[in-house]
Length: 155
Length: 155
DNA sequence: TAGCGTTCACAAGGTTCA
DNA sequence: TGAACCTTGTGAACGCTA
Ligand SMILES: [Zn+2]
Ligand SMILES: [Zn+2]
Ligand SMILES: [Zn+2]
Ligand SMILES: [Zn+2]
Image (cartoon, rainbow over all chains, first blue to last red; front, side):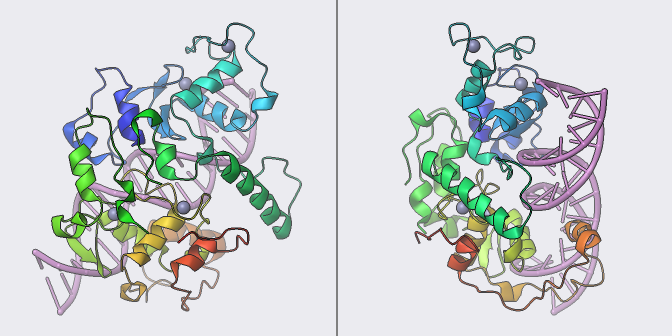
């Protein structure tokens, strides 16, 4: 449903053919704008239509909330192409609000990169996995549903 | 695995709600929908009514279980048209569950002749490192557990 | 036509460099 | 931080055979 809901949050003039909307396939060109900052966006990143910079931002910061400087204003900063650098806290908050999902971040080296042995790598993955499983929804369906208020949980 | 579990409620204005609901569950076989993801299906592939993408997915991944990233969630991901890309492990598990058979994959030319581009790329890296086509466990549970010792399949 | 394989452009993940 | 790039997986289109 990610594509659906992402599309519905786009401006009306975004061209979406009936066919592409029905298909939701790879070649249904999603010409639109980043749901976070409004920059041009072509693909879905981490579950929501977003620009390249917000994609990278989200991967870097998604799991590092505690390291983000808290909002210096009212916690409701407007995120635009020009202002997106000003407040990381509100930018990340908006990323999550518009439907980007941490669970789609596959980065394996959340801690550091020095571990090389296969055993340690697996240990690391298990730690990551436990962390994710304990704190986040466990079904891709949930991940792809930006707006959960309308949904009845299938599980 | 309950296929009807994905009969979640979409917002009213989603035009494909009815259609999407019909694609799932017991109606699928009668009305020509993929038993794996619910996409439109017209023919039987590898022993089960399935869409073109799940057909290709199964042929590619059916014998590469060990290369599939284990489920990052609870091993019971819901597979839909939109979510099918999120978790390959659960998608393959569902392929097997709904009756797709790896025995119907003709893979006699994996080593020579024209490989698909994806395989070619991998061949460049590790010369098809003796991924012997010997029978892997066909049990989807094995697939979901893989080497993650701390994961128990809820199925 | 059914059902299998092949191809290739693109989606979406990560990485690098300035 | 973000543009450019790298890597892998995907799926629509197509080709082949019975
Ligand atoms: Zn953006
Ligand atoms: Zn702020
Ligand atoms: Zn399918
Ligand atoms: Zn899964």
